Length: 359
Image 1 (cartoon, rainbow, N blue to C red):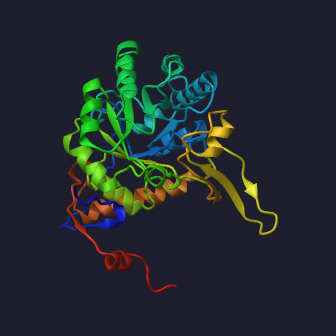
Image 2 (spheres, rainbow, N blue to C red):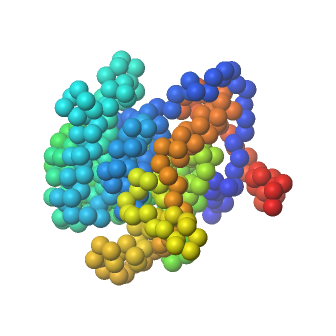
Protein backbone atom coordinates (compact mmCIF):
# COMPACT_ATOMS: atom_id res chain seq x y z
CA UNK A 1 0.00 0.00 0.00
CA UNK A 2 1.23 3.50 -0.79
CA UNK A 3 0.01 7.06 -0.63
CA UNK A 4 -1.40 8.18 -3.97
CA UNK A 5 -1.38 11.80 -5.11
CA UNK A 6 -3.46 14.02 -7.34
CA UNK A 7 -2.93 17.52 -8.73
CA UNK A 8 -3.89 19.48 -5.60
CA UNK A 9 -1.47 17.38 -3.55
CA UNK A 10 1.65 18.70 -5.28
CA UNK A 11 3.35 21.95 -6.27
CA UNK A 12 6.12 22.10 -8.86
CA UNK A 13 9.43 23.57 -7.68
CA UNK A 14 10.94 26.48 -9.66
CA UNK A 15 14.42 26.13 -11.13
CA UNK A 16 17.01 28.54 -12.51
CA UNK A 17 15.95 29.84 -15.91
CA UNK A 18 17.45 31.66 -18.90
CA UNK A 19 14.14 32.00 -20.73
CA UNK A 20 13.83 35.57 -22.05
CA UNK A 21 10.70 35.35 -24.17
CA UNK A 22 7.93 32.98 -23.10
CA UNK A 23 6.10 33.18 -26.47
CA UNK A 24 9.10 31.43 -28.05
CA UNK A 25 8.73 28.35 -25.87
CA UNK A 26 8.01 25.24 -27.95
CA UNK A 27 5.02 23.08 -26.93
CA UNK A 28 5.27 20.44 -29.67
CA UNK A 29 4.62 16.93 -28.42
CA UNK A 30 3.61 13.43 -29.47
CA UNK A 31 -0.05 12.46 -29.41
CA UNK A 32 0.70 8.85 -30.31
CA UNK A 33 3.81 6.89 -31.25
CA UNK A 34 4.03 8.34 -34.77
CA UNK A 35 1.88 11.48 -34.78
CA UNK A 36 2.67 14.85 -33.26
CA UNK A 37 0.86 18.09 -32.46
CA UNK A 38 1.82 21.71 -31.87
CA UNK A 39 0.27 21.87 -28.39
CA UNK A 40 -0.36 19.06 -25.88
CA UNK A 41 -4.15 19.35 -25.76
CA UNK A 42 -6.75 16.82 -26.95
CA UNK A 43 -10.51 17.42 -26.77
CA UNK A 44 -12.28 14.50 -25.11
CA UNK A 45 -14.53 12.18 -27.18
CA UNK A 46 -17.67 13.06 -25.20
CA UNK A 47 -20.96 13.77 -26.98
CA UNK A 48 -21.17 17.24 -25.42
CA UNK A 49 -17.49 18.09 -26.13
CA UNK A 50 -16.13 16.97 -29.47
CA UNK A 51 -17.68 16.68 -32.88
CA UNK A 52 -16.24 18.09 -36.10
CA UNK A 53 -16.65 21.76 -35.09
CA UNK A 54 -14.52 21.28 -31.98
CA UNK A 55 -12.01 19.07 -33.81
CA UNK A 56 -11.60 21.70 -36.53
CA UNK A 57 -11.03 24.48 -34.03
CA UNK A 58 -8.62 22.35 -32.00
CA UNK A 59 -6.60 21.63 -35.14
CA UNK A 60 -6.53 25.32 -36.04
CA UNK A 61 -5.09 25.99 -32.56
CA UNK A 62 -2.45 23.26 -32.97
CA UNK A 63 -4.17 20.61 -30.88
CA UNK A 64 -6.37 17.58 -31.58
CA UNK A 65 -10.06 16.84 -31.22
CA UNK A 66 -11.21 13.24 -30.86
CA UNK A 67 -14.63 12.84 -32.51
CA UNK A 68 -16.89 10.85 -30.19
CA UNK A 69 -18.47 7.50 -31.09
CA UNK A 70 -22.01 8.07 -29.78
CA UNK A 71 -23.51 8.34 -33.27
CA UNK A 72 -24.00 6.12 -36.29
CA UNK A 73 -20.98 4.88 -38.23
CA UNK A 74 -22.13 6.89 -41.23
CA UNK A 75 -22.49 10.12 -39.26
CA UNK A 76 -19.14 9.79 -37.51
CA UNK A 77 -17.44 8.96 -40.80
CA UNK A 78 -19.00 12.01 -42.45
CA UNK A 79 -17.65 14.17 -39.64
CA UNK A 80 -14.17 12.73 -40.17
CA UNK A 81 -14.43 13.47 -43.91
CA UNK A 82 -15.43 17.07 -43.19
CA UNK A 83 -12.60 17.46 -40.67
CA UNK A 84 -10.05 16.02 -43.07
CA UNK A 85 -11.18 18.27 -45.91
CA UNK A 86 -11.07 21.36 -43.69
CA UNK A 87 -7.49 20.53 -42.67
CA UNK A 88 -6.18 19.46 -46.08
CA UNK A 89 -8.68 20.95 -48.54
CA UNK A 90 -7.68 20.09 -52.09
CA UNK A 91 -4.03 20.09 -51.07
CA UNK A 92 -3.76 23.85 -51.40
CA UNK A 93 -6.61 25.45 -49.46
CA UNK A 94 -6.42 23.69 -46.07
CA UNK A 95 -4.60 25.08 -43.07
CA UNK A 96 -2.30 22.04 -42.70
CA UNK A 97 0.65 24.09 -43.94
CA UNK A 98 0.36 26.28 -40.84
CA UNK A 99 1.45 23.25 -38.81
CA UNK A 100 4.81 23.04 -40.57
CA UNK A 101 4.54 19.28 -40.93
CA UNK A 102 6.69 19.24 -44.06
CA UNK A 103 9.59 21.09 -42.46
CA UNK A 104 12.79 19.24 -41.64
CA UNK A 105 12.40 19.85 -37.89
CA UNK A 106 8.94 18.24 -37.62
CA UNK A 107 9.08 16.09 -34.52
CA UNK A 108 7.05 12.97 -35.35
CA UNK A 109 7.70 10.02 -37.63
CA UNK A 110 4.61 10.55 -39.79
CA UNK A 111 4.27 14.06 -41.17
CA UNK A 112 0.49 14.44 -41.04
CA UNK A 113 -1.96 16.37 -38.91
CA UNK A 114 -3.59 13.93 -36.47
CA UNK A 115 -7.21 13.13 -37.30
CA UNK A 116 -8.57 11.21 -34.34
CA UNK A 117 -11.85 9.40 -33.77
CA UNK A 118 -13.14 7.09 -31.05
CA UNK A 119 -14.31 3.51 -31.36
CA UNK A 120 -15.59 0.91 -28.92
CA UNK A 121 -14.90 -2.81 -28.60
CA UNK A 122 -18.03 -4.43 -30.04
CA UNK A 123 -18.14 -6.33 -33.31
CA UNK A 124 -19.75 -3.34 -35.04
CA UNK A 125 -16.77 -1.22 -34.01
CA UNK A 126 -14.58 -3.21 -36.38
CA UNK A 127 -16.76 -1.98 -39.22
CA UNK A 128 -16.65 1.50 -37.64
CA UNK A 129 -12.86 1.43 -37.49
CA UNK A 130 -12.49 0.50 -41.16
CA UNK A 131 -14.96 3.16 -42.23
CA UNK A 132 -13.31 5.89 -40.14
CA UNK A 133 -9.88 5.11 -41.56
CA UNK A 134 -11.26 5.10 -45.09
CA UNK A 135 -12.78 8.52 -44.31
CA UNK A 136 -9.43 9.96 -43.25
CA UNK A 137 -8.81 9.09 -39.60
CA UNK A 138 -5.18 8.25 -38.85
CA UNK A 139 -5.52 7.74 -35.08
CA UNK A 140 -8.23 5.63 -33.46
CA UNK A 141 -8.92 5.79 -29.74
CA UNK A 142 -10.38 2.65 -28.16
CA UNK A 143 -12.69 4.45 -25.76
CA UNK A 144 -13.74 2.32 -22.77
CA UNK A 145 -13.86 2.94 -19.03
CA UNK A 146 -11.66 -0.02 -18.01
CA UNK A 147 -8.83 -0.48 -20.47
CA UNK A 148 -7.02 -3.29 -18.62
CA UNK A 149 -9.31 -5.86 -20.20
CA UNK A 150 -9.05 -8.73 -22.66
CA UNK A 151 -11.60 -7.16 -25.02
CA UNK A 152 -9.39 -4.07 -25.33
CA UNK A 153 -6.30 -6.24 -25.88
CA UNK A 154 -8.13 -8.19 -28.60
CA UNK A 155 -9.36 -4.99 -30.27
CA UNK A 156 -5.83 -3.58 -30.43
CA UNK A 157 -4.60 -6.82 -32.00
CA UNK A 158 -7.46 -6.77 -34.53
CA UNK A 159 -6.77 -3.15 -35.48
CA UNK A 160 -3.08 -3.82 -35.97
CA UNK A 161 -3.82 -6.80 -38.18
CA UNK A 162 -6.68 -5.38 -40.25
CA UNK A 163 -6.14 -1.63 -40.58
CA UNK A 164 -3.60 0.16 -42.79
CA UNK A 165 -0.09 0.41 -41.39
CA UNK A 166 -0.18 4.20 -41.01
CA UNK A 167 -2.99 4.09 -38.41
CA UNK A 168 -1.98 4.53 -34.75
CA UNK A 169 -4.10 3.03 -31.96
CA UNK A 170 -4.53 4.65 -28.54
CA UNK A 171 -6.27 2.72 -25.77
CA UNK A 172 -7.42 3.17 -22.20
CA UNK A 173 -8.45 4.10 -19.69
CA UNK A 174 -5.82 2.66 -17.37
CA UNK A 175 -4.05 3.64 -14.15
CA UNK A 176 -1.37 0.98 -13.48
CA UNK A 177 1.95 -0.10 -14.91
CA UNK A 178 0.60 -3.65 -15.28
CA UNK A 179 -2.16 -2.32 -17.55
CA UNK A 180 0.38 -0.32 -19.55
CA UNK A 181 2.58 -3.37 -20.05
CA UNK A 182 -0.45 -5.45 -21.05
CA UNK A 183 -1.66 -3.01 -23.72
CA UNK A 184 1.84 -2.36 -25.01
CA UNK A 185 2.28 -6.10 -25.49
CA UNK A 186 -0.80 -5.95 -27.74
CA UNK A 187 0.90 -3.27 -29.84
CA UNK A 188 -0.79 -0.05 -28.67
CA UNK A 189 0.64 3.28 -29.90
CA UNK A 190 -0.57 5.47 -27.03
CA UNK A 191 -2.07 5.14 -23.56
CA UNK A 192 -4.96 7.10 -22.06
CA UNK A 193 -4.53 7.35 -18.29
CA UNK A 194 -7.16 8.14 -15.68
CA UNK A 195 -10.02 6.31 -13.96
CA UNK A 196 -12.65 8.11 -11.92
CA UNK A 197 -11.13 11.60 -11.93
CA UNK A 198 -13.43 13.34 -14.40
CA UNK A 199 -15.54 16.25 -13.18
CA UNK A 200 -18.81 14.36 -13.77
CA UNK A 201 -17.47 10.83 -13.21
CA UNK A 202 -18.82 8.81 -10.26
CA UNK A 203 -16.76 5.64 -10.78
CA UNK A 204 -14.78 6.02 -7.56
CA UNK A 205 -17.98 6.69 -5.60
CA UNK A 206 -20.00 3.90 -7.22
CA UNK A 207 -17.28 1.24 -7.25
CA UNK A 208 -14.49 2.33 -4.91
CA UNK A 209 -11.95 1.81 -7.71
CA UNK A 210 -9.54 4.33 -9.18
CA UNK A 211 -6.12 5.89 -8.62
CA UNK A 212 -5.44 9.61 -8.04
CA UNK A 213 -4.16 11.12 -11.24
CA UNK A 214 -0.58 12.17 -10.44
CA UNK A 215 0.30 8.71 -9.14
CA UNK A 216 -1.46 7.02 -12.08
CA UNK A 217 0.45 9.11 -14.63
CA UNK A 218 3.78 8.57 -12.89
CA UNK A 219 3.30 4.80 -12.61
CA UNK A 220 2.32 4.41 -16.26
CA UNK A 221 4.82 6.90 -17.73
CA UNK A 222 7.69 5.29 -15.82
CA UNK A 223 7.45 2.09 -17.86
CA UNK A 224 5.69 3.27 -21.01
CA UNK A 225 7.46 3.34 -24.36
CA UNK A 226 4.54 5.16 -26.04
CA UNK A 227 3.02 8.59 -25.35
CA UNK A 228 0.70 8.98 -22.36
CA UNK A 229 -2.46 11.09 -22.43
CA UNK A 230 -3.61 12.31 -19.00
CA UNK A 231 -7.40 12.22 -18.84
CA UNK A 232 -9.64 13.57 -16.09
CA UNK A 233 -9.40 15.84 -13.07
CA UNK A 234 -7.74 18.77 -14.86
CA UNK A 235 -9.32 22.07 -13.79
CA UNK A 236 -6.63 24.68 -14.47
CA UNK A 237 -3.59 25.35 -16.66
CA UNK A 238 -1.56 24.58 -13.54
CA UNK A 239 -3.00 21.06 -13.52
CA UNK A 240 -2.01 20.73 -17.19
CA UNK A 241 1.56 21.66 -16.23
CA UNK A 242 1.57 19.14 -13.40
CA UNK A 243 0.26 16.34 -15.64
CA UNK A 244 2.95 17.01 -18.25
CA UNK A 245 5.58 17.48 -15.57
CA UNK A 246 5.03 14.01 -14.10
CA UNK A 247 5.16 12.19 -17.41
CA UNK A 248 2.19 12.81 -19.70
CA UNK A 249 2.78 13.81 -23.31
CA UNK A 250 -0.70 15.34 -23.70
CA UNK A 251 -3.77 16.12 -21.65
CA UNK A 252 -7.33 15.26 -22.61
CA UNK A 253 -9.84 17.94 -21.62
CA UNK A 254 -13.59 17.81 -21.09
CA UNK A 255 -14.90 20.18 -18.44
CA UNK A 256 -12.44 22.97 -19.30
CA UNK A 257 -13.83 23.01 -22.84
CA UNK A 258 -17.47 22.45 -21.84
CA UNK A 259 -19.87 25.30 -22.54
CA UNK A 260 -17.86 26.75 -25.42
CA UNK A 261 -19.29 27.72 -28.79
CA UNK A 262 -17.79 24.72 -30.59
CA UNK A 263 -19.20 22.03 -28.29
CA UNK A 264 -22.22 20.11 -29.61
CA UNK A 265 -25.66 21.22 -28.49
CA UNK A 266 -27.77 24.35 -28.43
CA UNK A 267 -27.21 27.40 -26.26
CA UNK A 268 -29.84 27.50 -23.51
CA UNK A 269 -31.14 30.87 -22.32
CA UNK A 270 -32.46 31.37 -18.80
CA UNK A 271 -35.38 33.71 -19.42
CA UNK A 272 -35.38 34.82 -15.79
CA UNK A 273 -31.75 35.87 -15.51
CA UNK A 274 -30.78 36.15 -19.16
CA UNK A 275 -27.88 33.77 -18.53
CA UNK A 276 -26.64 31.51 -21.34
CA UNK A 277 -25.76 27.84 -20.81
CA UNK A 278 -24.88 24.59 -22.59
CA UNK A 279 -25.29 20.98 -21.47
CA UNK A 280 -22.36 18.84 -20.34
CA UNK A 281 -22.65 15.18 -19.39
CA UNK A 282 -20.41 12.29 -18.54
CA UNK A 283 -20.10 9.51 -21.12
CA UNK A 284 -21.43 6.97 -18.59
CA UNK A 285 -24.22 9.22 -17.29
CA UNK A 286 -27.86 8.17 -17.41
CA UNK A 287 -28.64 11.13 -19.67
CA UNK A 288 -26.06 9.97 -22.23
CA UNK A 289 -27.35 6.41 -22.15
CA UNK A 290 -30.94 7.53 -22.65
CA UNK A 291 -29.99 9.96 -25.42
CA UNK A 292 -28.25 7.20 -27.40
CA UNK A 293 -30.71 4.37 -26.65
CA UNK A 294 -28.20 2.45 -24.56
CA UNK A 295 -29.06 0.08 -21.73
CA UNK A 296 -29.72 2.04 -18.54
CA UNK A 297 -27.17 0.17 -16.43
CA UNK A 298 -23.64 0.71 -15.11
CA UNK A 299 -24.35 4.40 -14.65
CA UNK A 300 -21.12 6.05 -13.49
CA UNK A 301 -21.56 9.71 -14.42
CA UNK A 302 -23.58 12.86 -13.91
CA UNK A 303 -25.01 15.64 -16.09
CA UNK A 304 -24.85 19.41 -15.69
CA UNK A 305 -25.58 22.77 -17.28
CA UNK A 306 -22.45 24.90 -17.85
CA UNK A 307 -22.32 28.65 -18.30
CA UNK A 308 -21.71 29.58 -21.92
CA UNK A 309 -18.03 30.51 -22.36
CA UNK A 310 -17.81 31.77 -25.95
CA UNK A 311 -15.19 30.55 -28.40
CA UNK A 312 -12.92 27.70 -27.29
CA UNK A 313 -9.90 29.54 -28.73
CA UNK A 314 -9.86 31.83 -25.69
CA UNK A 315 -9.78 28.82 -23.35
CA UNK A 316 -6.96 27.21 -25.33
CA UNK A 317 -4.96 30.46 -25.42
CA UNK A 318 -5.24 30.76 -21.64
CA UNK A 319 -4.03 27.19 -21.09
CA UNK A 320 -1.16 27.64 -23.54
CA UNK A 321 -0.12 30.87 -21.86
CA UNK A 322 -0.13 29.25 -18.43
CA UNK A 323 1.81 26.27 -19.72
CA UNK A 324 4.50 28.44 -21.33
CA UNK A 325 4.86 30.31 -18.04
CA UNK A 326 5.24 26.96 -16.27
CA UNK A 327 8.06 25.92 -18.60
CA UNK A 328 9.81 29.24 -17.97
CA UNK A 329 9.70 28.63 -14.21
CA UNK A 330 11.47 25.33 -14.87
CA UNK A 331 13.99 26.83 -17.28
CA UNK A 332 12.66 24.63 -20.11
CA UNK A 333 12.46 25.76 -23.73
CA UNK A 334 10.39 22.74 -24.77
CA UNK A 335 8.40 19.87 -23.30
CA UNK A 336 11.21 17.37 -23.82
CA UNK A 337 13.20 19.27 -21.19
CA UNK A 338 10.26 19.75 -18.83
CA UNK A 339 10.95 17.39 -15.93
CA UNK A 340 10.26 19.43 -12.77
CA UNK A 341 10.51 18.17 -9.24
CA UNK A 342 7.62 18.70 -6.87
CA UNK A 343 6.76 19.01 -3.18
CA UNK A 344 3.78 17.36 -1.55
CA UNK A 345 1.74 20.12 0.06
CA UNK A 346 -0.54 20.27 3.07
CA UNK A 347 -4.09 21.65 3.08
CA UNK A 348 -2.62 24.91 4.35
CA UNK A 349 -0.21 24.95 1.43
CA UNK A 350 -3.06 24.37 -0.97
CA UNK A 351 -5.06 27.19 0.59
CA UNK A 352 -2.04 29.50 0.32
CA UNK A 353 -1.72 28.59 -3.38
CA UNK A 354 -5.08 30.13 -4.22
CA UNK A 355 -6.01 33.81 -4.04
CA UNK A 356 -7.02 34.24 -0.40
CA UNK A 357 -7.59 37.97 0.08
CA UNK A 358 -10.91 38.15 -1.73
CA UNK A 359 -13.78 36.41 0.02
